[in-house]
Image: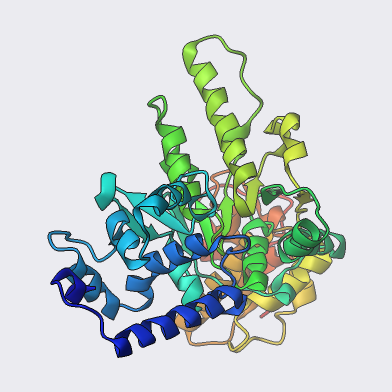
Amino acid sequence: MLETRQGKSINDDELRTLKELQAGAATLHRESDAWRGLPTTGLSRLEMDILACALAPEAQPRLAWLYLALQPGVSHPYATVALAQALLALEDKHVASLMQALLVDRPLRRRGLIELEGGGPLQMIKPGPGVVARLLGVPHREAPPGAILISQGADWDDLILPEDRKQMIREFLLWVKHRDTVVDRWKGQKIGGPVALFAGPSGTGKTFAAIVIARALDWPLFRVDLGRLVSKYIGDTEKNLNRLFDAAHDQPMVLQFDEVDSIMGKRAEIREARDRYANMEVSHLLARIEQHNGPCILTTNMRDHLDHAFYRRFQVVVEFPAPDATARTQLWKKLLPPGAPRHSKVDFQFLGEAVSLTGGNIRNAALHAAYLAAEAQSPICLSHVATAVWRELTKSGKAVSLSDLGPLAADLPEKILPQTKVASQAPTPGANRH
């Protein structure tokens, strides 16, 4: 192309090579495996060519230099509309087809395969977020605006829940795994999401379950911080939500929205203009979630505060109960560091039955006990566990008595007790049971 711009003609060998490359490109258009699962079904040949132009400088970085050389005065290494016309050898009568393919409601942009920046013939055609990573088989780890990556890993065996709740979570995964079968092959109605609501007290495993889902899909999990998205300025919340979902749409990722009751509570009676806009923000959030092509998990500690009109929008609603003694026994067994030395009297069943704690409480107490043992250079003893559980119980600032420790109270060192009067019916602390 550089030589033709300088008035040089293409010789027969070069022309033959170009025709061979053109034939090879036509073959790749027909071979879906070459596109590694990108949503290219139904794209026209022109749309596929435009996509190739957009992906080229990132998929093959050496081509970025060529793009710069072909566009004097352009400071970015992406194809402009003018360069795309030249690269694809489109005659003037086909320019209208090129421009139509770039419209926001056409497949390339609707599916998030490309983005446009600027205007006019030098408008930049860029690959959409994560598209090149998917093409190259590289995990996409770039957080969408307003979200953070959750890097913790977990598997089904780590999820301590009643079996019926685990089954509901597995059914949620079916909406992702079999979308192509139900929607494309069986012509089922296409909806966004899927969307799940995980409800239950803090520390019962809602986020842990989201981690398991992401691990099962081999996708990253991003936690959305609604506090960073919701703005007191009218219209800004919607803009922030649009940026989030535009970046995440059709990407292989799981979005988790924590404490959604803060924004999805029962809609307020409209008494002033701000009430009306608050309701509009909730409606906009729900609309974007429904349009989003990807799993969304909403969590709440206060299910009763949610507007019941929202429930029809969820594909799965899972209630996370506080763990019973059997579940607590399993949690202690998993969460006390397995490589740590442990005194023979630190019995998991005893711990599970001793104090009613959530999974999050047990995780914190198990680690605290391990650090106490490490400092003492000794095995984990009941006194370490009792101290750690006491610290966990007193975190909230609520009144706590030794009776809340149950049989563990006998192992709480006296020096740990605050200088306040404790319940008279409690066991005497400091007994040497370890």
